[in-house]
Image (cartoon, rainbow, N blue to C red; front, side):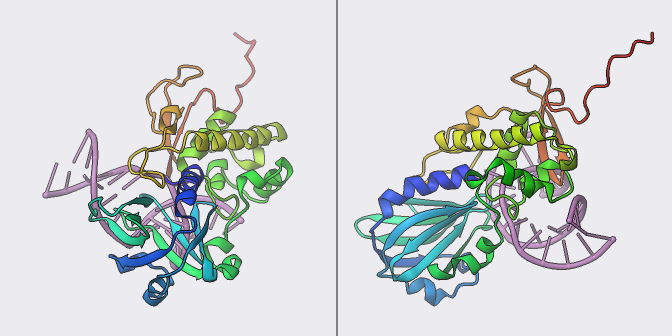
Length: 282
DNA sequence: GTCGATGTTATCAA
DNA sequence: TTTGATAACATCGA
């Protein structure tokens, strides 16, 4: 679930509390967490201090003094949170960074898809996951948005999910964005007119900022940097609501596989084809 | 117990 | 270029 709004919420909740704190001890409990990074590099972080916490797409970037950056990808079920060392360690806790006082920064991930990568901050733009990301949604003008999408073929929803085109949108928010824009997830981008692009663009900005305001969506495992749940799950209009009534027209929400992911949408508000004009023959 | 699905994405084949 | 399948893994619900 960690999409842009969730990762941004983790960032905002974590930064003020770990900024200027030192790493006193490193306890890696599952070596597979490290990606393209040596254990010695991780252990060498003892004595480093956190400077800031950034986000790029769905990744978290923890900048340290001494010029290194820790990149966490939460994937499906990863959690990065600050806690007290008195808190019992879960069997899915894969990394524990002891900070000063009783504070610990922990990475927990039941499914073990998430990872940590450490690299020099200066090489950020050439490092693997970051260098292939498209622009941030909030940095895009409508013109840029249109030209990014127009350069590709295919259905709109799978394109919104592509991180190399636009960074940060995942399955939940793609569905919510398209619902608000009244665009069917399978609509070919080649058939979108300017007004429809405009609606998707406005909807993207609106949904993402609203989801950040509500501190993200907790479907199951997502937690912010202090272990708190989000609140946006109560505002979802279509995601996970198959068979329930569309909030606007009352039609049953449908679910369909689009680009090998589940897509939830209202078949009436999000039509694939415009209605044929009424027939006069009778 | 089994089966199918889950918010992500890299990789490979067609 | 695009798509679909697969894989990484644990958990949950039917």
